[in-house]
Image 1 (cartoon, helix red, strand yellow):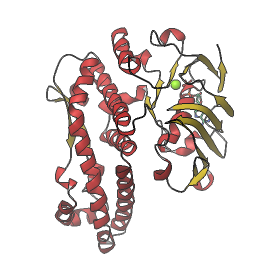
Image 2 (spheres, protein in one colour):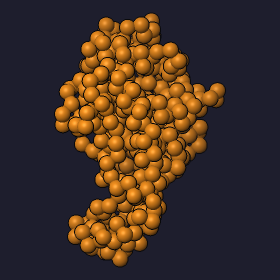
Image 3 (cartoon, helix red, strand yellow):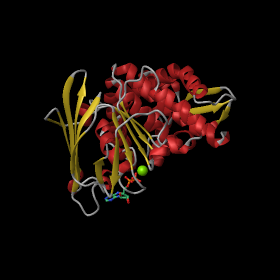
Image 4 (tube, helix red, strand yellow):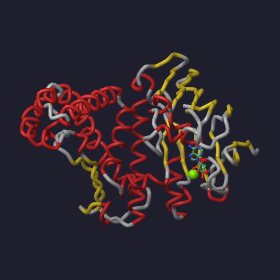
Length: 362
Ligand SMILES: Nc1ncnc2c1ncn2[C@@H]1O[C@H](COP(=O)(O)OP(=O)(O)O)[C@@H](O)[C@H]1O
Ligand SMILES: [Mg+2]
């Protein structure tokens, strides 16, 4: 998987541009506030048509602008591919295109282009609220398994409609969505459970590889596991019906679950050291990368936003080994304020980002 061309229009502070990109990737250098992260954001957006920084697409449009466009030309499995998105603030319209053909739904165009982002905010995967970990699970599994993506989008639609009915106090109408909710929701729960069971070992190994020697790491799913069976939903929804109606929201289902990280039985979020929490978050990102590689047979692009600057020298070395060591074939886009903050031995063309403009240096 190699990004060859990037077109951006009206995106954050970036000047409108068409860039040809080297197959090995780039180091993007520049002072704070120049547009390095925005460039990675434009490259990552068309993976799932969602920013890694915000859920509000309107924020990506240049201040005062009417919307944004991002177009990627890339090579995948020997073919030249294209994906593009145009967002208009007016009416919040998002138009997608895959290989020059309009796509009506995200499901059709998602995951054609693959990249995995490592950013300082990822630390919240380990230290922050459950919603971030659910999003992480949903992104990873959606890109690895089209059936999951389809089920998730049906689940979200059924949930939204069911909640709207509950808010209006329409119990009968809400009940009409029980069945689609159960069918799609069971696939979501089953997908997450199977993934977590497979990743417990790799998670522990990744933490050790990153240098976290002390303590026994554990990865577990926190939720009603029986909901992996569609048949289990009926009684649960029945039991919760009065409560759901009272609160105007569905209180049963994977939209309330969590991915739990522990060290020696203690929640990392509550008891982990800063270093442990950061390593656990990076370990999750490594699992995402390996999951996508295993599922697609492709090496997703690596989009590394200032991550190395946050780590001590030993952790930098260990992460670099995992990301760029032997056998890795990923194209790499990495940002840093200065060249001496790049990991050692990473030979990439260095481009400068200044006031939203990208300039090749050598
Ligand atoms: N929608 C937007 N329109 C214009 N400028 C923006 C928008 N969103 C953020 N910015 C500005 O873009 C600049 C570049 O941000 P960023 O890409 O995060 O820089 P860097 O990663 O190089 O530190 C910042 O100064 C920020 O204030
Ligand atoms: Mg930045």
